[in-house]
Image 1: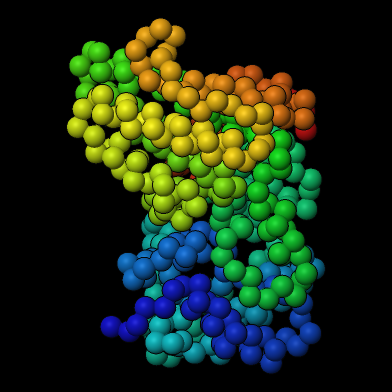
Image 2: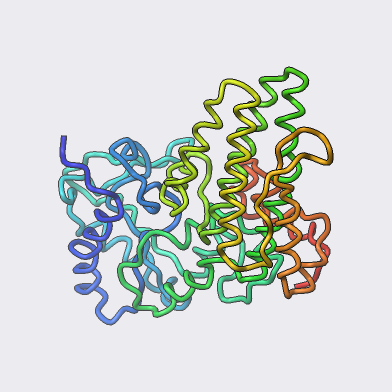
Length: 365
């Protein structure tokens, strides 16, 4: 077994040592950018030897201008196919044809043209593929609310190895995080979601519904984790990498052990007590940001019922009050962004579908 090399490092070296010399030889003066961004565990830096079984290997994207793309795409593809080595740092550079699932695997090949995965594309086409949106256009409030965080993460993570076009890094920065008012709106909506369930742990306990209590606790842990991603201005990935990404947040050291205790709690009272402890910690994190008027982080009963809650709607109201954009303030109910009201993977993976949710927000711009 050869030593595993993280995919992002492998692709950077592949560009520098194998792809770039061929481009300089056959296309001197060609203006392009080279990167590894988009989907894939290696883009996020989460790949392991297990990742090598699909869509993994020496690969990258070459970005051309709209004018140069039709002129050079096939010539570049063929030049690379004919002159790339069949192996790079011990890994094959050839990929098999996509199977029914669209998956491409590395295949051993000793002669003939290399079936490489150097994807040649324009910036506009690439961003449209992920977001169904022209990256050169102004991003409106409702545009932001329809972009899934996983897709935003895909286009802003990874590495740009060379930006000869002088615009790839600029476009990525444009999508790097939400504008202030959109960010506040999402925080408000996330607190609102928490407020809608925080009393149910106690109510389930009164009914002896241990299974219901456990599932609601798990939901609340996930909602609190998503709120922490918002606090640290970090897009969260889909479920496979959600916990891994959370572990890298600054607040994870304090919160992860408490979340684990909540999920491992053997009875309703213990579960409710640990959740209350978490609400206080997260409430203090909210206040430490200084983005709203201070909200008291205190556990009280739920309107006279003996359930431990922080009344999360108070934090939601404070965040709404801090928003300057009247369009955002006018959105009712507080459904938030697409990630906050839809969790269907197929829907969130379809740019055509998720962009259609724009009509749900009865505002212009």
